[in-house]
Image 1 (cartoon, helix red, strand yellow):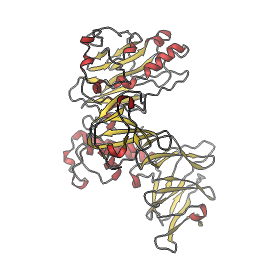
Image 2 (tube, one colour):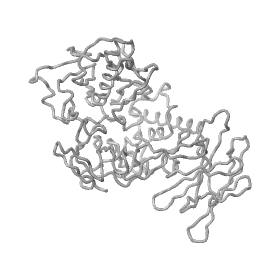
Image 3 (cartoon, rainbow, N blue to C red):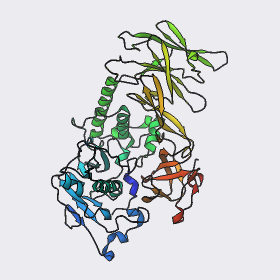
Image 4 (cartoon, rainbow, N blue to C red):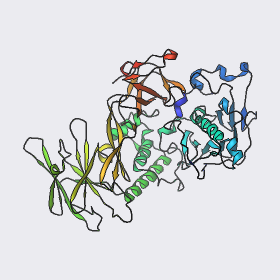
Length: 546
């Protein structure tokens, strides 16, 4: 088994199982045979089980190679399954409970009890390979790649166990909880295989030409922007955009050494240049289909149909200094009628003096309701607390709410609009004073923007922190679960925060070397495992820059 951290490919929020009833299960790359291969020994498409303790290769491996679940090694029997170049380990307690279906692209793991009750049931997950640049399989997660192929794991998109039998249901759910444990044992015997595809939008874009069937239609403009720029980033290009630069800095493969103005595109291959053009065309198509938000200069006359009645309103946004130096009052003039922002409770601390926006928060209104647009004005606020104020118009101007941050690509590097939702920023105290992406939902009936408290935040890209010592982390947000170690290094990044209350929560940590894992924080300390002699530690004792 290659020497790697268990969590190198833990990409999902966790080993959480969501049960439901009914519906057809979709399986990416379904198998063609249903042979039960558990507990047998073969050469290709095989399971190998070694019963004698002295012959168990797992006993000679270091704990961090195989990981652990609490105090128990769930792979202690050394059961493995080999399909061509792919090898995985099988949990001990699965013995006699599963079967494997294989086809030319990979294999699926099936719960035997559900499969015996009803044909097509029992799908747990599967591992497959493809030479497609764009992966469009349902519920698929990229795991690894070479220069010509990607490898992925597929999960059920609906209930896939026999839920009418409680014992079978409980067995399936317990087996399902070990998806990421099994995935963490993945070995691919291929030259040049790499296990960091989650750090790319298109891992093969520098080596494989995008084809017509590799549709980019479902990509957001944010994904397309990253996909285009990661081609340059592979060659060490730096970026003028602070958002892009910090985004790529957190990628293990990125070493930015060439200033943007000095980058020579002659280093790009023909495939890379062609793929860049294809991605640019996709970006143009996206912009044509999603023309909003539109940026306008302050003081200029604008015509937009704000209320969806088929007639464009004449709009002007103006700013005037109000007495004290550096203080401004803002006003919107629509069809000749002036509306002062102060009358709507909007008091600008440090307004953006260059542009405002017309937005379309909800792109798909009902047949009974006309499509409406909004006006967005920007305030840099005090300190580092920018705010975007939104107003709508239906014969009269109405204030619908504000969003922290500037959800506009020209201002912040990303487009924060997603058909009814606006992605802004929210201040956090975990793991330190920082910002995460927040979500505001537009209630079209009340015409109000409402902040959603989800308890999960992806953090804004920020500068790296030094990790002073080797740090034990969890592969999931479970203090009784599997562990691994992120080695001490100069650059680590806080990626995601899951809050339990105002001061407790889980934080996803990522090293520049690609290692990942969760730490549990309470009262400003990393919670240790007292039973194992691992005391809790102050964050500042472990990380720099806090």
